[in-house]
Length: 99
Image 1 (cartoon, rainbow, N blue to C red):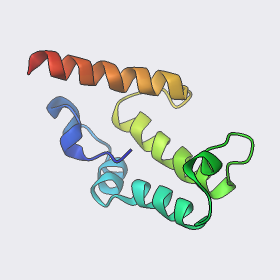
Image 2 (tube, rainbow, N blue to C red; image 1 turned 30 degrees about the vertical axis):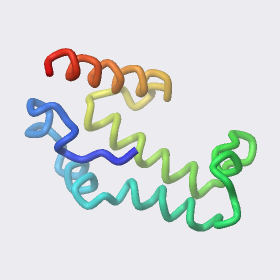
Image 3 (cartoon, rainbow, N blue to C red; image 1 turned 180 degrees about the horizontal axis):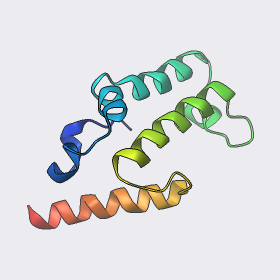
Image 4 (tube, rainbow, N blue to C red; image 1 turned 180 degrees about the vertical axis):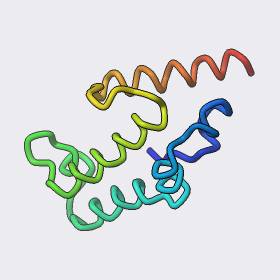
């Protein structure tokens, strides 16, 4: 998932902490995930994301990306993947309703 400031509600863009806005603008979190995937060229997506064998570098890259998404959207640092996805889909559904 690549996040850009344009994907955020306008009311949230101005309030992004500088470190989050800078990282998002530079696509650093997404690139970390892509680099971690590229380090395992023979692995399928199923291999890469098997919860029992997921590589530490990919886990770390996704944790960094998740932390920035949580901060950008005002989510608790302790939210779960399910909480994060539910929140993002709710925002999307709300936006689609307004369109």
